[in-house]
Length: 226
Image (cartoon, rainbow, N blue to C red):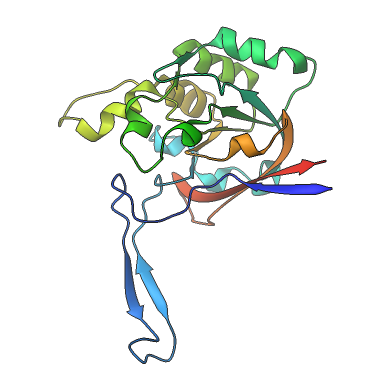
């Protein structure tokens, strides 16, 4: 039996993103059809990062043929016992991968169940999130999946961005090592990883077909065989 798990946030109004839906034509206004206008930036909600996001000379989504990575065998590394502000280290990743050390997966999901513990619509989701240490980022780079996904704010500094002062620089080692140096596509702000219910699954990830993009909203599902 095949089971589908949607790993994607809904796109709706949210304090972090300033997303708004504006009616263009409506049935209520006696227009012949209904359509809406809305604003989206490429790194809002569940989205995928291409290296161009962090590297002015980096690859865009076009440079990654979708047939190479959109459907992959996936390993879910489970850190659902991590509490607030917990650091996930390379040693922890290595230990979680131990049962599968003789097999390489084209995609990794790093699970903390953040959205199960804290409402993703609150500032707390970011302000006390678990995060990956620099050596964990290097571990992912060296594992070299085609794509890696997170259900938490994977760089510690992400929590600082909403109060960032002009000219202030923050370090984001996961973006630096995984995305920029490793050239590994990364999917941010996923949910429902706890519903996969297995260490492995098939991951299907389909971004919008925007051209020369540094990132895009993406619909991600896990396919679990039971």
